[in-house]
Length: 160
Image (cartoon, rainbow, N blue to C red; front, side, top):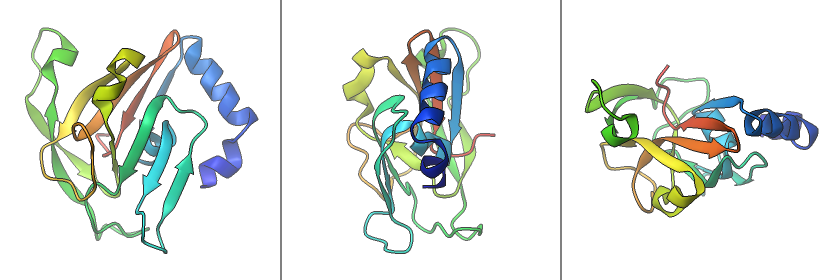
C-alpha cells in the first residue's frame, strides 16, 4: 500500500511511459505484485490482507499470494528456498538450467498466465511445488510482459 500512496497518479504514469517508450521494469516480490493489474495478498487474514487494483498493470491479471504459507513481516519465519522450473523455450537455444532454487518469503503467483499470451505475457519460470493459493492455469513464478517498446520482468520469489 505504501507504493500506491507514493506513486498512484503521476508517479505511475511516469513509470508506465518510461517502460512503454523502451525502458524496463524489474519487479521482485512486492514489485511483482505491484506490476500486476490486481494484487491479492493473504485474503482472509485481517492482519496481512492487501487486495485491490494496481495502476501499472504490466501483467494484465492478478498476482496472488502468499504462494507458500508462513509469511511474517520483518521476519524470516516463513522464508523458503523454493524450486523454480525454467521454461526453456522462452530462452531459445543455449545452456539453460531446467530448474533452480530461489528465496521466497511472501511471494505471489501470476494467475491464469495462459490467458494472456496474446497480450505479450511470457512465462519464464514456474513453481515446482504445490502452492497454498489458487494459481489458475499454471503456477507462474516469473513472467515477462511486453509493454509498448519496453518490457516488465515480474517475479514472485527473490531470484536476486
